[in-house]
Length: 258
Image (tube, rainbow, N blue to C red; front, side, top):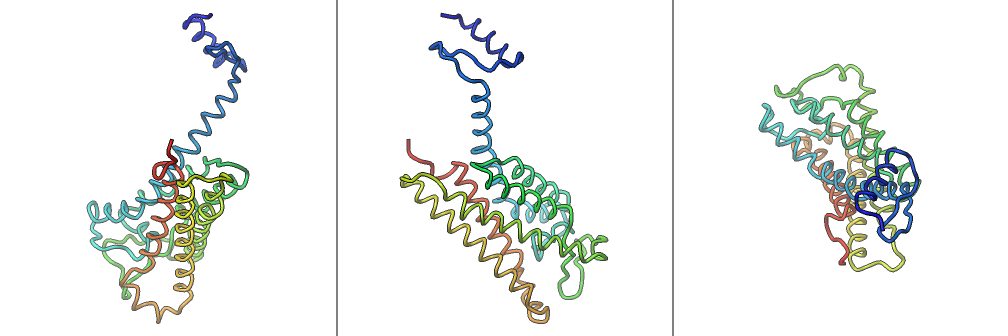
């Protein structure tokens, strides 16, 4: 029977010497690479999911509160992307880039998960680095908004709009088709979680469809509606649904009973 010190020294040799096996208390060898892989999976399946969920769920709230408390914008912007043109610009870009990095790092169960998360991360980076055109209410730009050169290059705003839509679609795909995969004999909690995933996915898809219709309608029709901020609220609903589904998937809510 090895002493604790000997076991500790052998583990150090494994870590720094590159050996592939360590000994357990029962004397059975355990593959170090397998343990390392398990540690990575734990981080991917739990921590990253929770972080993605938290970032998505609170994103609109942070932008609104930050603009209210730290800037001169005392009203909600027309869209979430419009916060790029406020004092919350750096927060908007940093927040979306952080969310994208977590999506890039998410490996999931199989290659499909990795492909969808990678595309979602790419779309997120495009949303952050290629800002939307500044939306104007009643023909004037509020004093608290920051005008930038993107207005001279409308193609940037168009790319931003497409990337934002594809980002939400990617998240809806995750929720509808990947999160619902699982056991052939699901637990009662898993059945409840699947219902939440389906509801969240359909909410996101509904928001996308309504937004597409809204943008397709002539401005003469939609202009009177802009004061009610329909784009902002639809985007917010989609982000909250997206964030909540990831929090559930991250085992923060409705976990299986032990």
